[in-house]
Structure formats: structure tokens, C-alpha cells
Length: 351
Figure 1 (tube, rainbow, N blue to C red):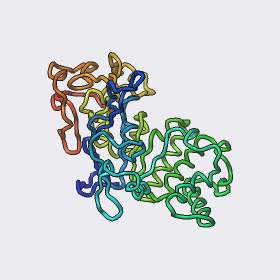
Figure 2: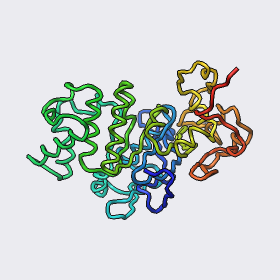
Figure 3: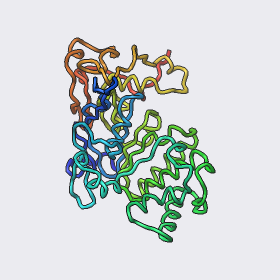
């Protein structure tokens, strides 16, 4: 994808507007609601055809919940907000408002690759059954045609078609994830949500899966929403990156800009703590004080202000909106224009 090409907002494949996903906290014999976990608290972004947008942040920031909510993997709809998806006919529909029956035609166009390749495959089903199930459920193929389609999908993910009669226990982690990718591609989706798709794999296998995903993206014109916490992986595969903190997007920018010149203090801290082989860079780490706030009881104002070394009085009382401070770079920080933050590309200090 040409990252420098102008983007038309009306041509976006997916537009998420002020998405909120709250889970109730119930206690007592009668299970009365006593509070709620604000897992996703007002997330907005656009995703254009053919690009890869990564959601990054610490565990519990809401990135996985965001991805699952977009494909409507939860039984209940989002608490608030819009999930605008452009169908094959060019019509835009709000997935957040659709019931199960209305969602069915759109589920073919949105698929998910899960984190754990050992847990996401049914051990009682053969590879043929696992990959063929979406084809049967959606009435795409059956019988010999189904077997032919499964064989072609296995070839696409670089596995021999002869493996279709085997069970998941016969494969390595990398092979299982390839099977998971083949299953996601079975219905011919336009959008694939990859939830920590390589985090459970060895480093060498991670590179193979990432290269495979990029090849498939080019061949099939796929659009990826890539959920991850490994910034090295994110830097390699992403066109743009959205940084999340306690249910909110705090920075959204093109990958090269975000890594070279972050505008939010939390992004700076994440980049500073990426492991580096050069011992001269080890002193450049930023140790955040305190713990990640509880999404059931988040801090007032900017959620990051209790851990931010640049925080001022305004940060504790006023929540900063996500605003565009430079072309393509959105930041939720009151002082983004005045702060000078260090990026991952900063050279080491030489004595």
C-alpha cells in the first residue's frame, strides 16, 4: 500500500466512532450490578482497504476487546458507538446495530486469527473439518468441492494438502497458526483481525508467519487490524499504529512517524522500553511509576496522568480529546505541541 497516497474518508473499509464496551460487575446473591469495567472507552479510528493498522498497549488496555467487538464476537452488542463497515456493494452499515440474522452476510467479510494456536483449534476435528466448517456454515461449498477448496487454502498458507486428514496435535505451533489463518481465509474476507497472532510462537516462526501474512495481503487485497504488544513486530508489519491506554486511543500515526517522533508520553515510555542489543542504550529506559489503573475505576482527566512525568494540574481534571496535531498524527495530550519526546530512532549518547 502507498502510505503517502491521500486517503478519502468516504472510501474507508471500516470506521469506528466513539466505541464503548462496558462489562457489568455483579455481586451478591441476586447478582446486582454494582459497577462496570470500561474495557473500551470511546475509541475512534478509520481503516482503509489494503492497509495494516496495529493496536498496541499494555495488557488490559482494551485492544483485544476492541478487535473482538468489531467482528461482533461477543453475545451482546457494544455499549455505545458505531462500527461502520463498507460491504461488497459499497453500502456502509453500522454493525453495532445489527442482530445475529442481519450480521450473517457480513461475518463472511470479517474473520479473526486468534492468539493461541493450541487452544483455537478443536482437537477432535481434522484439518479438513476445521477449515471446511466456515464453508459449510455459509453454504459456500460441500463434498468434493469443499475438499478442493480446503486443499487450495492449505497451499496458500504453505502446507501440503495431504495434511487435511490429520488432527491438530500432529502439528507444531507455527503449523497450527497457518491452519488458523487458512480457516480465516476460507470465506474470502476483506478484513482480518489478528489478535496477538504471533505472540505464542518462537521468534524464527514469528518471522515466517508475518511474511506469510504480508504475502497473503498482497495476493488477496486483505486489510488487517493487528492487535499486538510486541513493538518490533508492529514496526515490521504496520502501516499505522494506534496506541491504547486504559480503554482509550492516546496516539494514532503512521508507523515511521510514531517510532521516530512520538507525541504522547505513554508512547515515549513504550518505545524506550523496547529491548535493544546495544548496551549503551540500556540507560535510556523510562520506568513508569505505579500500576496500570483499574478500568472499573479509572483516574479522572487523562487516565495516564498519575504515571506521567510531564503531568500538570490540568491533566488531573480535564480529559484530553484525540486531536490531529500534524497531518495523519492524532494525539490525546494537552501539551503534545510543546513536549519534546524521544523516539525509538534516537542515536545513542557517545561519551
